[in-house]
Image (cartoon, rainbow over all chains, first blue to last red; front, side, top):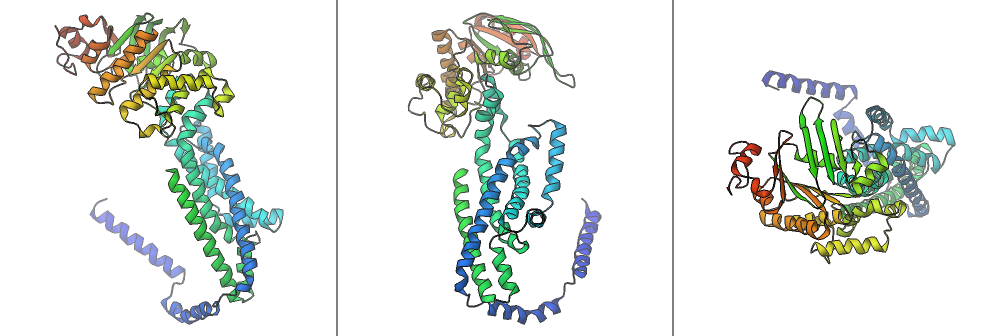
Length: 250
Length: 255
């Protein structure tokens, strides 16, 4: 883009920004007026009430379990979908169909799916697991399919030229190239799913979020802060372990 | 051993890479396929094992028609034809031994090759092939930790354990430095002599073609423009193949 066109672009960008700020009622005064209340809120959270640590741990373990089962099932479901959504692996009609479906499902976040599944199968961790599965399967399928499209055709050709069957080509020419990336993507999604699963309890879909919401609603701020502390430790531990594992896969 | 009749390959858009190729290659021959880049050498080699389906013409390999063969029949033909690639085409993350075992896929019980749980005989054969390539002791190394020359020898071992009647090599040394080219060509010559395996290799260095080929086939614009023993590759013959003054790799001498 040259001179005048570029200026028009910047002005338009600024216009959109200020229009959005105005529409969302962004206000420095209200922000400043709110500061004492924020500080008061934080002050009332301390010291954390460690007597609820049992509940917090129970919730944390359930959050972890929701993420484990949800990510595991999603990874398996994503495999065939990914091949259908890879330009170099599927016929065009299947490819475009799969891509369209994936983009549509991916537009909706885990929490929204959780609302839907709570209504369908009732309260508890199970609707949470279902929500994680649906969203994660579509995200992983997209990531997997991009890895499939970036595959080196050379080894595939070599295995084919050795007289291998299509199944053998998949097992020996394709999967060895993809497995490290697939595992890495899956671990990364597992990390993200811990965070996603932590708020599923807000809509009654199990996990640590249930306690956060219960204590906040009951104005039991010290108890809420104890649960948040446990959540922070859980997320940090999982991130650390998972990133260590992923580094070894490269 | 190999019979090619009226072979044509045209890509959509009308690019004709092979134009009425006729060729007869006997058992145990060592053929060097030369020609400028784009002359159709790779396409011709890939028609011989059915990786490319020609537009017209006929290819018969070891008594079986490659053209028109599909499924199991095509895989049986490919199993008897080893292929060595310019870029090696190994699975970089797998071990040296696993890469060689790929050459056994067509000869092993299907489910065992998928597990994988190869029979002891396959493992022995793979180790023997590696030892023969001078790579004994490297079986468990990841292939991407090897040098280029070693990787190409792994690829030759992979072709060898197929127990092939024919080995096709597509510029097997052009990603290697000159000293290593001789090692690779020497290995192909030994396989040809000791095992009686027919070898057809495309080359872009005339010196190597003269030194190793016992028959030299020249391609230009998808046509066979030269066919004869190394002595027949005179300066004028090289000019006919590569165009005047176009011969690479110190070519054109020797007459």
